[in-house]
Length: 96
Figure 1: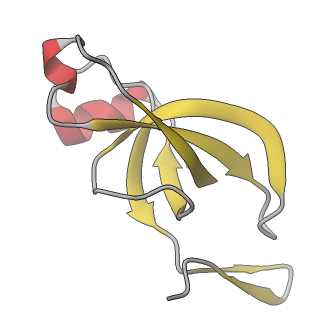
Figure 2: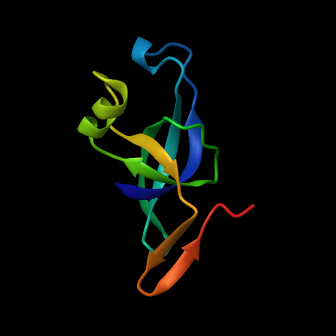
């Protein structure tokens, strides 16, 4: 699992039928303290997140299969992160 920041979304007019009904988001991996890395990839949004939110991403095909059955998904957004306790500090995200 990875901590990521949602940076954007992908719009497809035609896509694999198993993707219908799901948003495809561009996410950037964060360090434990919330600092952005240079690693970005696409993930299917299973929960309805927005751009700018800090999320939990399962980046393994077997994780996607548990949620969706036989799917072509490699990375799935499965949670919104409110805070992280890392190296004796608490980092808060997605504050309203």
